Length: 537
Ligand SMILES: *Cc1c(COP(=O)(O)O)cnc(C)c1O
Image 1 (spheres, rainbow, N blue to C red):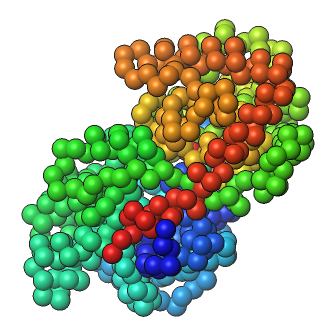
Image 2 (image 1 turned 135 degrees about the horizontal axis):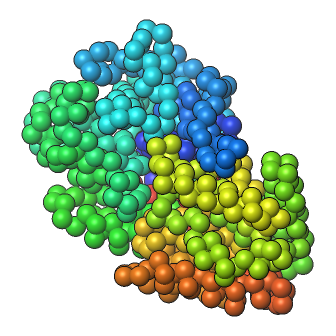
Image 3 (image 1 turned 30 degrees about the vertical axis):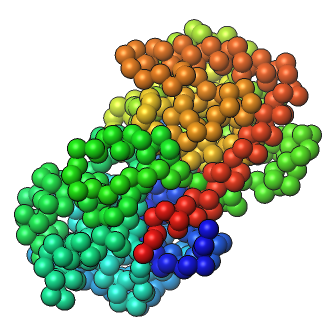
């Protein structure tokens, strides 16, 4: 592996999750991007981030008196304390209007510099809102945000004088950067096809979800109206992204190499996009997490001593229980099994699945033999997701001694939960979970994964040794019933008895969980893979 070859990378992403108080992220995509930028700094790799300075960030989602989530944005202006002004601005065209973007630098979280574009300037008047809220708005509003990220992002790199060998579009949101890179070459005298072909060698793309709606697309007329053509013709735009213009398709056609975010996701993505002509090959590069941000460093030091692992875990569990007590005024029991689940509340993730046949586990909740802590947000416009959260909250109100729901899932809650639970539950409908990095964080802290064989877990699970699987990877008719039955069988016959009756085995499993994940699922390994497999010039 030759990382001396310091290829310079510009890493574009709509969100970056660096710290709980710097609210310019929503979830997994942002946390991955934040972990990547921290790891690039650790490894001294010349990766530069390009993103957006969200003024209000993503929803701060709280629970009302009736047990239903509602959206309440954090006060404006709070994010500015985490950035410094570069003094540079760039201009983009939105709806035939010039929009000025201030460029901020974020580098205070032991990360490689990230340049963030911001339209919140008085002179932008009725265009100030573009960088207000992450993942909100109509198709036209999203396009305006993507113009700022992609087109504005390339212009910022030029004005900052940052050299770039490889442009990494992390998710399709950044695909409009391609129009700017093509336009630059057309201005130098190349025709459209030549410009595109020359550029491809310098663009790589990561796709993140097998869920259809997760792959944003827009009617080409909308792109035209908002100004995303950026000098290209409609025919040229359609050659890149089709009509409707699919941002993932555009990424796959602009890039020369692409990747899915776990071994299984690569396979799923290759199949999902096989009908797209002229697309980049899709490799599998499994995500990884930044140790120092997520893992109790002491766990690695005591890895060979089961009693010390147990002692540290007990401390982490108590921290989580104290937090739950503070937030919710609920007393969970340190000595009883604690199962955690924290995800975006999307229906394919089936967050309330363990309660679908409440009769199977009711006695365990009543006796406080199994305790659960949940967290997660629904997208502000996703009422089905909000219903799911409301259901979980209603169960927590019925069994307050054994079920808790923590509102406003964020990086702090993620850290506490992936350190302090005993078991990390995940039950997505296969094969729709692309990766699932929270499970990696848990595993490295000795929190045992208990999950369907989806995302990263399908390449790491050794059942009964470093965690458990249920459902045997079944896909097909009756999958929900199949998985539900399997979940209860493994929970009641393996997880619960091991916890209460076979302490030595449990400790051994914690040890294996850490050993089998600490290197393989680190962001260090992931970034090395990027350099070896994607960032070749
Ligand atoms: C790690 C993390 C995620 C991503 O985890 P998934 O397993 O993909 O759900 C999302 N949000 C927060 C706050 C995290 O810490």
